[in-house]
Image 1 (cartoon, rainbow, N blue to C red):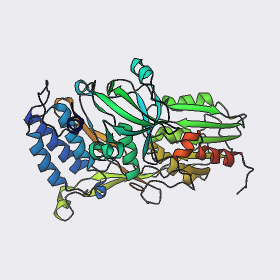
Image 2: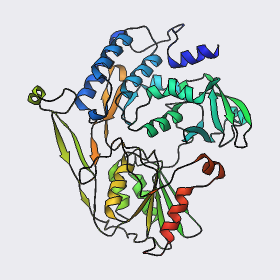
Image 3: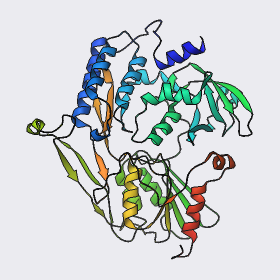
Length: 434
Protein backbone atom coordinates (compact mmCIF):
# COMPACT_ATOMS: atom_id res chain seq x y z
CA UNK A 1 0.00 0.00 0.00
CA UNK A 2 1.46 3.39 -0.95
CA UNK A 3 1.93 6.12 1.60
CA UNK A 4 -0.71 8.27 -0.12
CA UNK A 5 -3.25 5.42 -0.15
CA UNK A 6 -2.54 4.65 3.52
CA UNK A 7 -3.07 8.30 4.41
CA UNK A 8 -6.31 8.59 2.42
CA UNK A 9 -7.62 5.33 3.85
CA UNK A 10 -6.84 6.52 7.39
CA UNK A 11 -8.72 9.73 6.65
CA UNK A 12 -11.66 7.74 5.28
CA UNK A 13 -11.36 9.54 1.94
CA UNK A 14 -10.36 6.53 -0.15
CA UNK A 15 -13.22 4.38 -1.44
CA UNK A 16 -13.36 1.06 0.48
CA UNK A 17 -12.40 -1.99 -1.52
CA UNK A 18 -14.92 -4.15 0.31
CA UNK A 19 -17.39 -3.60 3.08
CA UNK A 20 -17.00 -5.94 6.05
CA UNK A 21 -19.95 -7.09 8.10
CA UNK A 22 -21.78 -4.02 9.37
CA UNK A 23 -24.37 -3.28 12.01
CA UNK A 24 -25.86 -0.10 10.59
CA UNK A 25 -27.96 0.22 7.45
CA UNK A 26 -28.18 3.51 5.56
CA UNK A 27 -31.49 4.22 7.26
CA UNK A 28 -30.01 3.56 10.70
CA UNK A 29 -27.04 5.80 9.93
CA UNK A 30 -29.44 8.57 8.97
CA UNK A 31 -31.44 7.99 12.14
CA UNK A 32 -28.23 8.15 14.21
CA UNK A 33 -27.24 11.46 12.62
CA UNK A 34 -30.70 12.97 13.09
CA UNK A 35 -30.93 11.80 16.71
CA UNK A 36 -27.48 13.13 17.60
CA UNK A 37 -28.30 16.45 15.95
CA UNK A 38 -31.68 16.85 17.67
CA UNK A 39 -30.45 15.79 21.13
CA UNK A 40 -27.62 18.31 20.87
CA UNK A 41 -29.97 21.07 19.72
CA UNK A 42 -32.29 20.39 22.66
CA UNK A 43 -29.89 19.50 25.49
CA UNK A 44 -26.42 20.90 24.77
CA UNK A 45 -25.50 23.61 27.29
CA UNK A 46 -22.72 25.47 25.49
CA UNK A 47 -24.24 26.76 22.25
CA UNK A 48 -22.44 30.08 22.51
CA UNK A 49 -19.21 28.11 21.92
CA UNK A 50 -20.38 26.73 18.57
CA UNK A 51 -19.15 28.56 15.47
CA UNK A 52 -20.47 26.12 12.85
CA UNK A 53 -23.91 26.07 11.23
CA UNK A 54 -25.56 23.12 12.99
CA UNK A 55 -28.38 22.90 10.44
CA UNK A 56 -25.89 22.68 7.57
CA UNK A 57 -24.03 19.98 9.50
CA UNK A 58 -27.24 17.94 9.62
CA UNK A 59 -27.79 18.18 5.88
CA UNK A 60 -24.17 17.34 5.06
CA UNK A 61 -24.05 14.34 7.38
CA UNK A 62 -27.36 12.96 6.16
CA UNK A 63 -25.92 12.99 2.63
CA UNK A 64 -22.78 11.22 3.83
CA UNK A 65 -24.82 8.68 5.78
CA UNK A 66 -26.56 7.59 2.57
CA UNK A 67 -23.25 6.52 0.98
CA UNK A 68 -22.04 2.89 1.20
CA UNK A 69 -19.45 2.82 4.00
CA UNK A 70 -18.02 0.80 6.82
CA UNK A 71 -19.11 1.37 10.38
CA UNK A 72 -15.56 2.54 11.09
CA UNK A 73 -15.87 5.30 8.51
CA UNK A 74 -19.31 6.31 9.80
CA UNK A 75 -17.87 6.47 13.32
CA UNK A 76 -15.18 8.90 12.16
CA UNK A 77 -17.66 11.04 10.22
CA UNK A 78 -20.02 11.30 13.18
CA UNK A 79 -17.07 12.25 15.40
CA UNK A 80 -16.26 15.08 13.00
CA UNK A 81 -19.83 16.27 13.28
CA UNK A 82 -19.80 16.32 17.09
CA UNK A 83 -16.40 18.03 17.10
CA UNK A 84 -18.22 21.13 15.81
CA UNK A 85 -19.63 21.55 19.33
CA UNK A 86 -16.19 22.51 20.72
CA UNK A 87 -16.95 20.47 23.83
CA UNK A 88 -14.35 18.23 25.47
CA UNK A 89 -17.09 15.83 26.60
CA UNK A 90 -18.61 15.44 23.14
CA UNK A 91 -18.03 11.86 21.99
CA UNK A 92 -19.42 9.10 19.81
CA UNK A 93 -19.57 5.82 21.73
CA UNK A 94 -19.74 2.83 19.37
CA UNK A 95 -20.94 -0.61 20.46
CA UNK A 96 -18.39 -3.11 21.86
CA UNK A 97 -18.21 -4.97 18.54
CA UNK A 98 -16.87 -1.85 16.85
CA UNK A 99 -14.80 -0.69 19.80
CA UNK A 100 -12.84 -3.92 19.48
CA UNK A 101 -11.79 -2.85 15.96
CA UNK A 102 -10.46 0.60 16.98
CA UNK A 103 -7.00 0.49 18.53
CA UNK A 104 -3.67 2.22 19.07
CA UNK A 105 -0.13 1.07 19.86
CA UNK A 106 0.79 0.87 23.57
CA UNK A 107 2.66 4.18 23.46
CA UNK A 108 1.97 7.04 25.86
CA UNK A 109 2.28 10.32 23.93
CA UNK A 110 2.28 13.79 25.42
CA UNK A 111 2.17 17.17 23.73
CA UNK A 112 4.97 19.42 24.98
CA UNK A 113 5.17 22.76 23.19
CA UNK A 114 2.94 21.11 20.54
CA UNK A 115 5.56 18.40 19.96
CA UNK A 116 4.54 14.73 20.57
CA UNK A 117 6.96 13.03 22.94
CA UNK A 118 6.92 9.35 23.90
CA UNK A 119 6.67 9.34 27.69
CA UNK A 120 6.37 5.60 28.13
CA UNK A 121 5.35 2.33 26.48
CA UNK A 122 3.96 -1.01 27.60
CA UNK A 123 6.22 -4.00 27.19
CA UNK A 124 5.13 -6.61 24.66
CA UNK A 125 6.91 -8.66 22.00
CA UNK A 126 6.67 -5.89 19.43
CA UNK A 127 7.93 -3.18 21.78
CA UNK A 128 10.91 -5.31 22.78
CA UNK A 129 11.90 -5.33 19.11
CA UNK A 130 10.99 -1.70 18.31
CA UNK A 131 12.56 -0.31 21.52
CA UNK A 132 10.96 3.16 21.29
CA UNK A 133 13.23 5.34 23.39
CA UNK A 134 11.42 7.27 26.09
CA UNK A 135 11.28 11.04 25.51
CA UNK A 136 11.84 10.56 21.78
CA UNK A 137 9.84 12.96 19.60
CA UNK A 138 7.57 11.61 16.88
CA UNK A 139 8.38 13.73 13.82
CA UNK A 140 6.54 11.76 11.09
CA UNK A 141 3.83 9.10 10.75
CA UNK A 142 3.69 6.97 7.60
CA UNK A 143 6.25 9.36 6.11
CA UNK A 144 3.98 12.38 6.69
CA UNK A 145 5.28 15.24 8.90
CA UNK A 146 3.57 14.91 12.26
CA UNK A 147 2.05 18.40 12.27
CA UNK A 148 0.42 17.69 8.89
CA UNK A 149 -0.77 14.28 10.11
CA UNK A 150 -2.40 15.77 13.19
CA UNK A 151 -3.86 18.82 11.44
CA UNK A 152 -5.39 16.92 8.51
CA UNK A 153 -6.35 13.52 9.89
CA UNK A 154 -6.78 13.86 13.65
CA UNK A 155 -7.71 17.39 14.69
CA UNK A 156 -11.03 17.53 12.74
CA UNK A 157 -12.36 14.67 14.90
CA UNK A 158 -11.26 16.11 18.24
CA UNK A 159 -13.72 18.14 20.26
CA UNK A 160 -12.39 20.45 22.98
CA UNK A 161 -13.23 23.78 24.58
CA UNK A 162 -9.82 25.39 23.98
CA UNK A 163 -7.18 25.18 21.23
CA UNK A 164 -4.49 23.99 23.68
CA UNK A 165 -6.67 21.15 24.96
CA UNK A 166 -7.72 20.20 21.42
CA UNK A 167 -4.08 19.80 20.34
CA UNK A 168 -3.26 17.85 23.52
CA UNK A 169 -6.12 15.44 22.88
CA UNK A 170 -5.14 15.11 19.22
CA UNK A 171 -1.59 14.11 20.15
CA UNK A 172 -2.91 11.51 22.59
CA UNK A 173 -5.14 10.02 19.84
CA UNK A 174 -2.87 10.53 16.81
CA UNK A 175 -2.01 6.83 16.37
CA UNK A 176 -5.56 5.48 16.73
CA UNK A 177 -7.09 3.56 13.83
CA UNK A 178 -8.20 0.12 12.70
CA UNK A 179 -6.87 -2.65 14.92
CA UNK A 180 -4.02 -4.68 13.51
CA UNK A 181 -2.87 -2.08 11.00
CA UNK A 182 0.83 -1.10 11.04
CA UNK A 183 2.36 2.33 11.45
CA UNK A 184 5.85 3.55 10.67
CA UNK A 185 7.07 6.30 12.98
CA UNK A 186 10.09 8.54 12.45
CA UNK A 187 11.62 9.49 15.79
CA UNK A 188 14.04 12.15 16.90
CA UNK A 189 15.89 10.78 19.92
CA UNK A 190 16.78 13.00 22.90
CA UNK A 191 20.38 13.16 21.67
CA UNK A 192 19.30 14.40 18.25
CA UNK A 193 19.74 11.18 16.22
CA UNK A 194 16.95 10.02 13.92
CA UNK A 195 15.55 6.50 13.70
CA UNK A 196 12.41 4.75 12.53
CA UNK A 197 10.27 2.12 14.23
CA UNK A 198 7.28 0.04 13.17
CA UNK A 199 4.38 -0.45 15.56
CA UNK A 200 0.94 -2.02 15.35
CA UNK A 201 -2.41 -0.71 16.55
CA UNK A 202 -2.95 -3.48 19.07
CA UNK A 203 -4.74 -2.09 22.15
CA UNK A 204 -8.44 -1.70 21.36
CA UNK A 205 -10.97 0.59 23.00
CA UNK A 206 -12.36 -2.50 24.73
CA UNK A 207 -9.00 -3.33 26.32
CA UNK A 208 -7.67 -1.90 29.54
CA UNK A 209 -5.15 0.77 28.62
CA UNK A 210 -1.89 -0.63 30.05
CA UNK A 211 -0.42 2.83 30.72
CA UNK A 212 -3.37 4.18 32.71
CA UNK A 213 -2.07 5.68 35.99
CA UNK A 214 -3.72 4.76 39.29
CA UNK A 215 -6.58 7.03 40.29
CA UNK A 216 -4.56 8.17 43.33
CA UNK A 217 -0.79 8.28 43.76
CA UNK A 218 1.01 9.52 46.86
CA UNK A 219 4.73 10.34 47.03
CA UNK A 220 6.54 11.35 50.21
CA UNK A 221 9.57 13.48 49.37
CA UNK A 222 12.76 13.83 51.40
CA UNK A 223 11.94 17.33 52.67
CA UNK A 224 8.68 16.19 54.29
CA UNK A 225 6.54 17.36 51.39
CA UNK A 226 3.82 14.93 50.29
CA UNK A 227 2.61 14.97 46.68
CA UNK A 228 -0.94 13.69 46.13
CA UNK A 229 -1.65 13.00 42.45
CA UNK A 230 -5.37 12.86 41.69
CA UNK A 231 -5.61 11.25 38.24
CA UNK A 232 -9.28 10.24 38.28
CA UNK A 233 -12.34 10.80 40.43
CA UNK A 234 -14.57 8.29 38.68
CA UNK A 235 -14.97 6.14 41.81
CA UNK A 236 -15.73 7.04 45.42
CA UNK A 237 -12.98 4.64 46.50
CA UNK A 238 -10.47 7.42 45.74
CA UNK A 239 -11.77 9.29 48.80
CA UNK A 240 -11.43 6.15 50.93
CA UNK A 241 -7.89 5.64 49.66
CA UNK A 242 -7.03 9.22 50.59
CA UNK A 243 -8.50 8.77 54.07
CA UNK A 244 -6.56 5.53 54.63
CA UNK A 245 -3.32 7.20 53.55
CA UNK A 246 -3.93 10.20 55.83
CA UNK A 247 -5.56 8.98 59.02
CA UNK A 248 -3.86 12.11 60.31
CA UNK A 249 -1.24 14.41 58.81
CA UNK A 250 1.59 13.75 61.23
CA UNK A 251 5.01 14.51 59.74
CA UNK A 252 3.50 16.20 56.66
CA UNK A 253 5.50 19.40 56.30
CA UNK A 254 3.67 20.58 53.20
CA UNK A 255 1.12 19.13 50.79
CA UNK A 256 1.06 19.41 46.99
CA UNK A 257 -2.18 18.40 45.27
CA UNK A 258 -1.37 17.48 41.66
CA UNK A 259 -4.40 17.80 39.35
CA UNK A 260 -2.46 17.87 36.07
CA UNK A 261 -3.99 14.62 34.79
CA UNK A 262 -7.46 15.02 36.34
CA UNK A 263 -10.06 15.18 33.58
CA UNK A 264 -12.89 12.87 34.65
CA UNK A 265 -15.04 11.92 37.59
CA UNK A 266 -17.41 13.51 40.06
CA UNK A 267 -16.82 16.87 41.66
CA UNK A 268 -18.35 15.71 44.95
CA UNK A 269 -15.43 13.32 45.46
CA UNK A 270 -13.07 16.25 44.91
CA UNK A 271 -14.96 18.25 47.51
CA UNK A 272 -14.73 15.32 49.97
CA UNK A 273 -10.94 15.41 49.66
CA UNK A 274 -10.74 19.20 49.87
CA UNK A 275 -12.90 19.04 53.01
CA UNK A 276 -9.94 17.31 54.72
CA UNK A 277 -7.63 20.21 53.85
CA UNK A 278 -9.67 23.10 55.26
CA UNK A 279 -10.71 24.31 58.68
CA UNK A 280 -13.46 26.64 57.42
CA UNK A 281 -16.44 25.93 55.11
CA UNK A 282 -15.82 26.53 51.40
CA UNK A 283 -18.07 27.47 48.48
CA UNK A 284 -18.43 25.33 45.32
CA UNK A 285 -19.28 26.18 41.71
CA UNK A 286 -22.45 27.83 40.48
CA UNK A 287 -24.08 25.85 37.64
CA UNK A 288 -26.99 25.92 35.22
CA UNK A 289 -28.58 23.60 32.69
CA UNK A 290 -31.05 24.22 29.83
CA UNK A 291 -34.70 24.32 30.77
CA UNK A 292 -36.94 24.48 27.71
CA UNK A 293 -40.29 26.22 27.48
CA UNK A 294 -41.93 25.79 24.10
CA UNK A 295 -43.61 29.19 24.12
CA UNK A 296 -40.26 30.97 24.43
CA UNK A 297 -39.23 29.71 20.97
CA UNK A 298 -41.24 32.55 19.46
CA UNK A 299 -38.67 35.14 20.52
CA UNK A 300 -35.31 33.44 21.27
CA UNK A 301 -32.75 31.95 18.84
CA UNK A 302 -33.33 28.31 17.96
CA UNK A 303 -29.91 27.23 19.25
CA UNK A 304 -30.37 28.70 22.72
CA UNK A 305 -32.10 27.34 25.75
CA UNK A 306 -35.46 28.97 26.37
CA UNK A 307 -34.52 29.31 30.02
CA UNK A 308 -32.04 27.97 32.52
CA UNK A 309 -32.41 25.91 35.66
CA UNK A 310 -29.74 27.10 38.09
CA UNK A 311 -28.11 25.46 41.07
CA UNK A 312 -25.39 26.22 43.57
CA UNK A 313 -23.13 27.46 44.78
CA UNK A 314 -23.15 25.10 47.74
CA UNK A 315 -21.28 25.51 51.00
CA UNK A 316 -19.34 22.49 52.25
CA UNK A 317 -18.05 22.19 55.79
CA UNK A 318 -14.78 20.54 56.85
CA UNK A 319 -15.16 16.80 57.40
CA UNK A 320 -16.03 16.00 60.98
CA UNK A 321 -15.17 12.29 60.70
CA UNK A 322 -11.40 12.77 60.13
CA UNK A 323 -8.63 15.19 61.18
CA UNK A 324 -8.05 18.23 58.95
CA UNK A 325 -4.73 19.36 57.54
CA UNK A 326 -3.84 22.92 58.48
CA UNK A 327 -0.43 23.28 56.82
CA UNK A 328 0.56 24.85 53.53
CA UNK A 329 -1.13 23.55 50.35
CA UNK A 330 -0.25 24.08 46.68
CA UNK A 331 -2.23 22.81 43.71
CA UNK A 332 -0.66 21.93 40.33
CA UNK A 333 -2.62 22.39 37.09
CA UNK A 334 -2.12 21.77 33.37
CA UNK A 335 -3.96 22.25 30.09
CA UNK A 336 -5.45 18.79 30.74
CA UNK A 337 -7.09 19.71 34.06
CA UNK A 338 -10.84 19.73 33.43
CA UNK A 339 -14.27 18.74 34.77
CA UNK A 340 -13.97 17.77 38.45
CA UNK A 341 -10.43 19.17 38.47
CA UNK A 342 -11.74 22.61 37.59
CA UNK A 343 -14.58 22.25 40.08
CA UNK A 344 -12.01 21.52 42.78
CA UNK A 345 -9.96 24.55 41.72
CA UNK A 346 -12.95 26.87 42.05
CA UNK A 347 -13.58 25.65 45.60
CA UNK A 348 -9.86 25.71 46.48
CA UNK A 349 -9.39 29.26 45.22
CA UNK A 350 -12.42 30.44 47.20
CA UNK A 351 -11.19 28.67 50.33
CA UNK A 352 -8.01 30.75 50.39
CA UNK A 353 -6.05 27.67 51.48
CA UNK A 354 -3.09 28.04 49.16
CA UNK A 355 -1.77 28.79 45.70
CA UNK A 356 -2.46 27.37 42.23
CA UNK A 357 0.71 26.73 40.17
CA UNK A 358 1.18 25.56 36.58
CA UNK A 359 -0.76 26.10 33.35
CA UNK A 360 -4.20 27.49 32.54
CA UNK A 361 -6.73 24.65 32.64
CA UNK A 362 -8.78 23.16 29.78
CA UNK A 363 -11.87 25.30 30.32
CA UNK A 364 -14.38 22.48 30.15
CA UNK A 365 -16.25 22.47 33.45
CA UNK A 366 -19.54 20.62 33.13
CA UNK A 367 -21.41 17.35 33.33
CA UNK A 368 -22.07 15.18 30.29
CA UNK A 369 -25.08 13.03 29.46
CA UNK A 370 -25.25 10.11 27.02
CA UNK A 371 -28.05 9.68 24.48
CA UNK A 372 -28.85 6.36 22.76
CA UNK A 373 -28.63 5.83 19.00
CA UNK A 374 -29.60 2.76 16.93
CA UNK A 375 -27.87 -0.60 17.47
CA UNK A 376 -26.26 0.24 20.83
CA UNK A 377 -24.45 3.33 19.60
CA UNK A 378 -24.64 6.52 21.66
CA UNK A 379 -23.38 10.08 21.80
CA UNK A 380 -22.61 12.32 24.74
CA UNK A 381 -21.98 16.01 25.34
CA UNK A 382 -22.14 18.63 28.07
CA UNK A 383 -25.55 19.38 29.52
CA UNK A 384 -24.39 21.70 32.30
CA UNK A 385 -22.14 24.73 32.53
CA UNK A 386 -20.25 25.80 35.64
CA UNK A 387 -19.02 29.15 36.88
CA UNK A 388 -17.35 30.74 39.87
CA UNK A 389 -19.71 31.55 42.76
CA UNK A 390 -19.96 35.15 41.49
CA UNK A 391 -21.26 33.89 38.13
CA UNK A 392 -18.06 34.43 36.10
CA UNK A 393 -17.74 31.54 33.65
CA UNK A 394 -14.49 29.93 32.58
CA UNK A 395 -15.69 27.59 29.83
CA UNK A 396 -13.31 27.88 26.88
CA UNK A 397 -10.98 30.12 28.88
CA UNK A 398 -9.89 27.87 31.72
CA UNK A 399 -8.72 28.84 35.20
CA UNK A 400 -5.43 30.71 35.24
CA UNK A 401 -2.91 29.80 37.95
CA UNK A 402 -1.63 32.37 40.42
CA UNK A 403 1.92 31.24 39.55
CA UNK A 404 2.19 30.38 35.81
CA UNK A 405 4.77 27.74 34.93
CA UNK A 406 5.07 26.56 31.33
CA UNK A 407 6.13 23.03 30.49
CA UNK A 408 9.06 23.04 28.06
CA UNK A 409 10.71 20.32 26.01
CA UNK A 410 14.02 21.24 27.63
CA UNK A 411 12.65 20.65 31.13
CA UNK A 412 11.03 17.35 30.16
CA UNK A 413 14.24 16.06 28.53
CA UNK A 414 16.21 17.10 31.61
CA UNK A 415 13.75 15.36 33.94
CA UNK A 416 12.89 18.66 35.59
CA UNK A 417 9.41 19.42 36.95
CA UNK A 418 9.49 23.20 37.29
CA UNK A 419 5.94 23.48 38.62
CA UNK A 420 6.55 20.91 41.35
CA UNK A 421 9.79 22.66 42.32
CA UNK A 422 7.91 25.94 42.83
CA UNK A 423 5.19 24.13 44.78
CA UNK A 424 7.74 22.54 47.13
CA UNK A 425 9.28 25.93 47.84
CA UNK A 426 5.87 27.41 48.57
CA UNK A 427 4.67 24.72 50.98
CA UNK A 428 7.96 24.60 52.91
CA UNK A 429 8.40 28.37 53.23
CA UNK A 430 7.75 29.95 56.65
CA UNK A 431 4.20 31.33 56.98
CA UNK A 432 3.97 34.86 55.67
CA UNK A 433 6.90 34.49 53.26
CA UNK A 434 6.45 36.18 49.85
